[in-house]
Image (cartoon, rainbow, N blue to C red; front, side):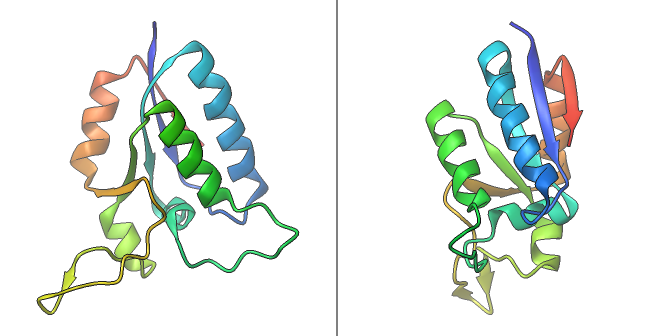
Length: 125
């Protein structure tokens, strides 16, 4: 089975992110999805505290549910996450309030390189 790695760079407010989630869900039926790497403004998909209107889809929860059901790791560029105010590390020696939706793990670009090296195909959305 072909292995793919996915890079998400679109924010949760973009209709393209919903399309990306649908693509990854469909791809998981045919391919081994090694992992999803959220980069640039795509890290906002992991934000726990985004205020979602009642008539809008909570895409962060959908990513989290999908990845949990399929056991697919979701990596978050830690530098980009910090830039957007998403934290889950120690600050001043005290645990920071976790601002990430369940299932997202902070990672460095080294993890992205590993995903790309292990994949047969890399898809950026």
